[in-house]
Length: 155
Image: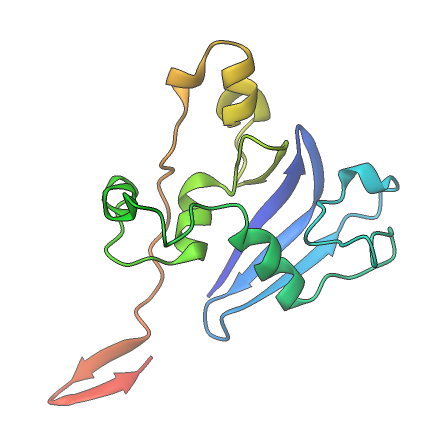
């Protein structure tokens, strides 16, 4: 299954962030109309490769996404996971449920939502944080394995 999001910088669509559930790999395709590096997220693009022509690798994307969610070492992580509807820590599942938003910048992942309706930093700046839709509902992925008879088979 392919799970696709639009990487947004405030209300500017930057490109498609794609996750392939079968390979567990990320890909990013920047939109051609993006010409300014201010729309490129630092982390996915580093100072070394912070240019409009660079194509982020899977590792670049993971590095950026992992920095956008609560760390698994957080003291109250079990409570946070419960609120997010998760049993185990999974940075990508946290990103899906928070749309990878953080209070430090204006980047986020969209499935068609509008910036002014969902971005927690925008909502906070306009005294509307109580309106945050986090956790977002997500489409469940097909299980990696299934039971056939008495055997565990990879899907």
